[in-house]
Image 1 (spheres, one colour):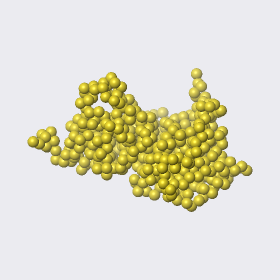
Image 2 (cartoon, rainbow, N blue to C red):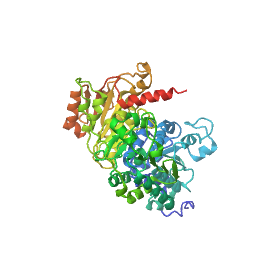
Image 3 (cartoon, one colour):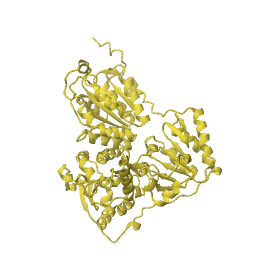
Image 4 (tube, rainbow, N blue to C red):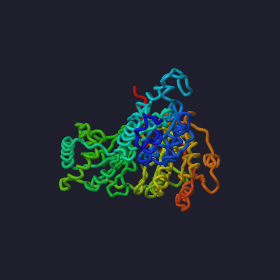
Length: 572
């Protein structure tokens, strides 16, 4: 006898099949995670729906990898198991929430029957409360779907994936073991999820545009400052059109690196208050109107809150509101406002004074020593990079050093300036490199990570080898936690690490002969030879570089920011 609960379905599909098919439709091609007994049956559906499973070494690494994947591919997915698995990835998901990265976190949970009966199961706190872990995730998810019934599973899945895309933040989806194979209507799969961004109220939008144009046309020395949320909330087309139409000088924040074509004649460099190059600082702070797009004015993004700009001379464009000087216009997305500003600008009323020109200052930072210094290395990296490279920098010297690197066109920069979880970049490198391959693009993925940070997540090198990925990995060997040294405890033992033979890990993790190359670089001459070598530049195998720098050397911006952080920590 037919099951009357499913007999009316036109195209019955299992809940797990529906979920993974939707992810495929949105553009996800690989799913990160770690298997566990509450998600195993669900994992069987991944290859059936055209997706690939990425088994990571642990859930935290998987979360970092999913974050990196989403920054390149647009969205990502990770599968963990109830309790122990999902809590292991909370740090990474919190980072994705903090930095506006769309990650779908799918948690395999005990059956609805077990939950209802409050059974004393493994991976629980032993108190019968099966909601506690979902409650923990609530504050780091923009939407949640508890798939406890097939009746509303499809609508909950569609809504959560839509919100993940539109809000550009993680969502949390629980999939109980007894729901995985329940039948739901598959006809919905013929209609793609609506991922269009909501339009603004036209009257409110028009009024705001008029106010923006009034101040823009009246300004004598306006500039554009682009930040991270311009990338995350997908307004880079509007950003570049605004630059082209206005001819205004454009700068980026540290978190905004990669948002703007840095070969554009209007590009002036990185602005981070006192951490900026002098000519950039002077130009930005002399402006009588700053158009900030997607700003995140955090401590490390502003070199310790060292901006010398006034809100009275600022128009902030955000995904949820626009702020013109001290007046806020809530409920407006910057996309619609920017597009109308671009279309309605009167160029004859616009004052566009050229700004400074950024270059990779290698010769200016040369000295008589063969020692590789932070000041010399980062501009030299700018000469090594190619168009469309993916560049990942770790919290620490790399995050601050990259400010002095002028990118070629099309470079994607990945960092975690706001959340700042050390070790993030290694997992993110795996995810970003895989995303580039899944997108069928011929892009190099290049990681710069400190030796201390690398030790936290080194296992993901194993995943890269298993997947046949070919990143270029620079491990900066400078004997420990440099940013912490400059904040407090320069010579304290807690900022030291055990030295590793880092490049030997490539063989330890099982790389086959001919599928990798390793290097140890200790002088400028060796660095120059490597960076100019055609074989190295081809990035046709995984390449691992031990790069040695002095223990107490740090980028200028890091020293300034660390000092500001130390003073802020000491405030009474």
